[in-house]
Amino acid sequence: GPVPPPPPIPPSLAAAEAPAAPLPPLAEAKPTPVPMRKMDEPPPPAALASTEQTPQFPGPLPGVERPRPAAPQGAMSAIPQPEPSNLPPAAVQSGNPQPTPPPAVLPPAQPSPEIAARPAPKAAPVATTIAALDLPAGATALAPDDGSRVATVIAQYQRQPRPVRVVAYAAPATGSAEQLNSFRAALDRAQIVANKLTEGGVPANKIQTEAAPSGASKPPGHVEVQFLP
Image 1: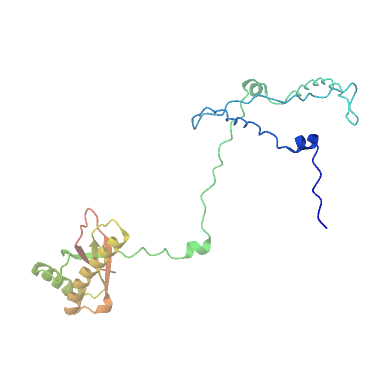
Image 2 (image 1 turned 135 degrees about the vertical axis):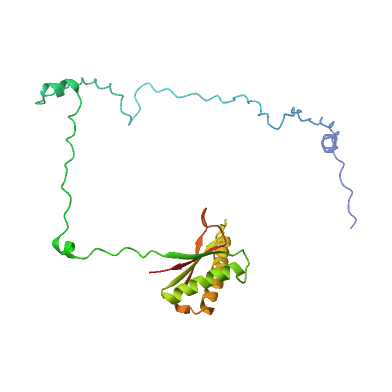
């Protein structure tokens, strides 16, 4: 059948269901501006908002020992007086130690009979310089004057053969590598003289070549030919 119409709404209910009027918008709260501070400036101290108080206890806390009074300070005992010494009165008055006794003088040591019976040791052999030459740096041959001096050495060797030593003096240098090169150049100059002696008849196994540092009396390039005993 047909649907009956809805009953009318009472006025009290109609007023309650009516939409309420919109509320006015709330004002937007603006943040309080904070003053800018410099980079190295510390922040301002904030106010202490703590309201807490230290609790007060009427009696001693449980488990806490009461403070004890300080112990009385003890008195230092008297220092005992030293016993009188048995030193002489002069030493006690001066307060200085006795002078040390003079050192003992021992007799010179005497060698044993076995050592005294041995012959005296021979002195080191002394070389005799026969000729002196001057070879400049980079020289490859002897000068005419130097050749005559070498001939004199050869003649003396033929009269009395003995070992021959050729010493060449090296120029001073600063570094180790430069000093080594200087000694090698000196050995080359000594070998030039040794080759000349070998050509004159002196056996090569009787000739020694050496390099030595130069000095005031032995300038660089100086070469000496010596006879060994």
